Length: 408
Image (tube, rainbow, N blue to C red):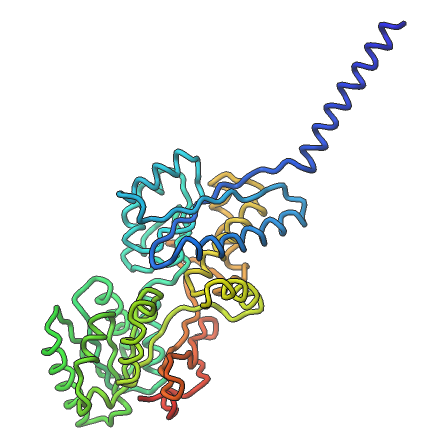
């Protein structure tokens, strides 16, 4: 009898231990999602960490409220610390990381393209936009619209401003040639005369060409019907800097690309950028965050530390965390193939800091709002005067482009 009671007590004890372990696992054990964030200059590690930690906290609270036992284990890597970008893939494989936010630039995506596809790594790139990568991609998603789409937005501005003759000037590079050709294609059959000036490095000769084109256009159109589209950065700065005050080019509207509004350029050449904006009637387009309540809340946390607003790329990093998180939550899986199936479904219904993410057949973002920037001479600063509404496919202005305080 004593042996039976002892055996019974042992069995009860073992059962309690098993139940206790199950209870512990149920309430306290978490599965970890490994996620790498790979960034490049001009962004600092502190900036990236702040945004990712905000996303991590928001996501884990979201999981906890729903009884989803997952937490994020995030690795933040600076691309420039690797001698070869392919070494990053080696490190990811070593750490068994299959989910990546980063490879911000298109040349980086081109270099790691095959390795990513062959190693079952999913990449959400916040900034790659080259048309060269508008090809089939299974594991790579681009959160910024392609350069072709930027060309479309510029063409919409040209039509909105009722321009009848435009001069497109740009260096002979793949990037600028692609945007230029897209603008020309979009304006086909719109009764707009187009002169396309392609140059290598002879800026003075280009200015002469611009002057000659404007002079010819003025035979049939007034200056308010003429515009110059310059696709570039330093060539745009160089051309406008060399214009004299009596140049015909100072009397027409200039339209610049998003390259002039990049974080790196604005940080390093703020005085120069303000100067060229004030010298000619120049507007620029760039993808920017949606000023939603969610953005304001997160941006306020960011601004307290860095004294600046979050830009598109920083917001896209935050959104990318949520796209992965929602895909994992809805699929109830961290298997790469399961996540891949859910990313397109999740993205188009997720209202992120830069809007919804609808992908095309190449996993490229189909559309996005673009802000329109203009120099305000009264405040001596570049301000947003309106935007291109992607869903409504139209230009919306807060200030007319011809408003006196917004011209040179």
